[in-house]
Length: 138
Image 1 (tube, rainbow, N blue to C red):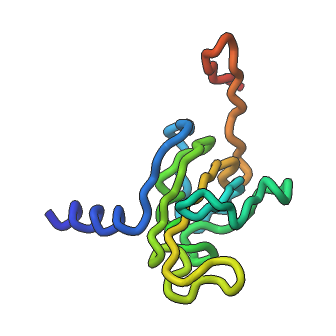
Image 2 (cartoon, rainbow, N blue to C red; image 1 turned 180 degrees about the horizontal axis):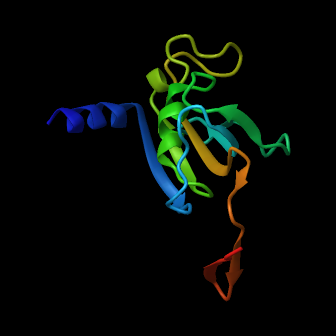
């Protein structure tokens, strides 16, 4: 009962659509330092921010309020190497305030994010061979 209710409340704030599976074993914990690449778009597809454009991954500490709530909660459900789309309702993004000149008030935001590193541990590179994804064992 109660746990499922809490889960449902969380789903209201951030929805995760997996694009490419991660390793399914390394998940971020509160306080971990993460390195990610991301592209942020509005629901209509207009881009408002991207770490790819800066050619530099984004480094932050998860679960400590350094990033929007949609990231703090959504990224912790991703595993190392995963690429996913986070759909954040405005209350899990920038809310009624928005960001002056960049994000209007009450905006739903979409982020395509790739979890590259957890505390310096890098995601394994995946090799594509004849259209089959082969995980490299290091």
